[in-house]
Length: 307
Length: 255
Image (cartoon, rainbow over all chains, first blue to last red; front, side, top):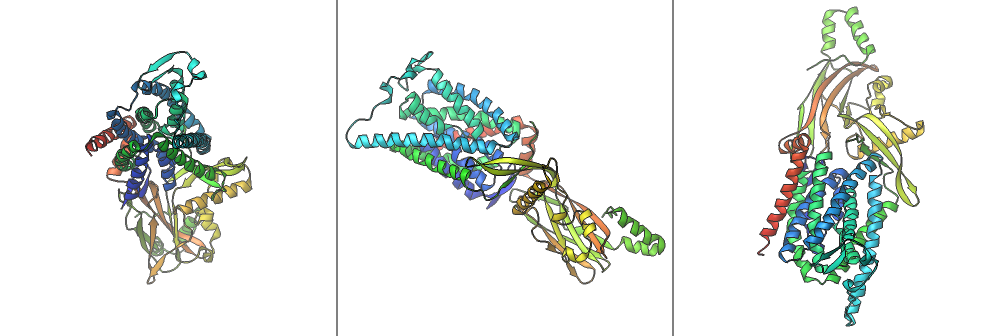
C-alpha cells in the first residue's frame, strides 16, 4: 500500500515505513539512543530529500525518546539534575549547529561534513566502547571485579564550579556536562540526530556515571533537544513531514517499549558491547560510502536561497 | 481550446502568406488543420498517488507529422561534481543551471530525424538534445557539456526526462492519440502540453494546452499549513510527537 508524503513529495510503501520505525524503535529503547543516526541514512537511501529526512527524523525521535524516557523515569533511572545541566549546554550548542548547517548547505559541503563527522566520531566511540566492554566481560569471567569508574581521580576532578549529582553518585565540575551537552548539541543540529549515540559514551567514560542512570538521563535530554530541533526545522525550512513522522513513530513507540524491557534484562557491559558493534557497522558503511568510487559523479540539488 | 500561432515568425509568415495568396476559405482550412486536447487538465496528487497516464488526442488534416511535448515547472538547479581528494570523494566543481524544466516528455508519430526539420525542432526546444539548459557560470565549454549531460541523465534516472520518444498513433487518416506517463515523483506546478504539426520540414501550426499538477486533499492541507503557518506547524508536530510517546508508555505500562 503506497502513501504520498506531502512534504517529502514522494510515494512510499506504508508497511516499509512502519517496519523501519519498529526496528529503529527497538534499538532506541534498548540503548537509550534516539535512533536518528540509523533512521536518517535509511530515509535518504529511500529517496527522501536529506533536508526533509533530517527535520522529520528529529520529530520522530521526540516521540521515541519521550516514550523511552517515561518508561525509565518510572523505574527511577533518571538523574534530572545532570540532565538539566546537559540540556543547558545542548540548547546553546544546537543554536550554533543550526547556523553552521545553513552555511555548509549553501556551499554544498553539508553531505560531506555529515558523513565525515559521523565516520570519525563513531569510529572512535565504537572502538573505545568495544574494547572496554570486552575487557570488562573477560574480567568478570575470571572472577575479578572490573575497576569502577567513580573511584578514580583524574584532571577532570580538578575543575572549578563543582556540583553534586546524588543520583549519579558524582561530585564534579558543572563545566564538564555543560561542555558535553554543547558539543552534542552542535553535532545534533548538523547531523539531524538527538545525539544519544555520542552522549552515552561521553557520560560513561568522561563523567563516569553509572550505566543504570545513563540511558534514562540521556533520553531526558534528547526529548528537549529534538523538540527544539523539530520546531526550528519546521519554522526555518518547512522540512518536517508530519505524515512521514507519524508513520515512523507509530512503529517506533511500540518498538521502544519492548526495547527498554530487553535492555533491563541484559548486563551493562553486554549492552555496551552490542551497541559498540552496531556503531562500528554504521561506521564501516559510512566509510565505504566516502571512499568507494560513487556510481554517479554528479549530484543535482535545487538552489538554496538565504533563509 | 486556444489556437496559438506562437511558434515562430517564419511559421506565422508562411501561414499569413497562404492566407493572402489563396483565399479566405483556405485560411479557414489552415486554422483547422490541428485540434488537440488532453483527457484531463489537472493532475491531483492525492495521498495514494502513484503516478498517472494522461491521454492526449486530436485531429489533423491528414498530412504531416505530429510531435507532442509536455514541459513541467521551471526552476534553478545546481549540479556538483565529485572528485577524490585525499582518498575521499568531495564535491569540487559546481555549475548552476537556470530555468530547468522539472519534467519533460516527448511523443511523435515517427523518429524526429526523419522529419528534416532540425532547425525548427531546435528552435522550439523539441527533443532532449535541443533543451536549452543555460549554465549561469560554466567555467569552460567542455565542462558545461559534461554537467549538462549529467543533469539530463539525473532527470532520466528519475523518469522525469524521456530516454526514448513515445509513439503518437494515428487512428485512420486524421485522428491521433498518445499516452503520457507522469511518475509518482512528478513535481507540482504549471505545465504545458504543446502539439506541433510539421510538414516539409516546417512547423505549420502549433497548439498549447495548459496543465497543472497540484497536491490535493489532506496532503495539500498539510503542505499549505507547513508553508503558511510554520510556527504553528512546528508546535503541532512537537506536541503530537510528545503525545504519541506518552500514549505509548501508558499503553505499555501494564504489559
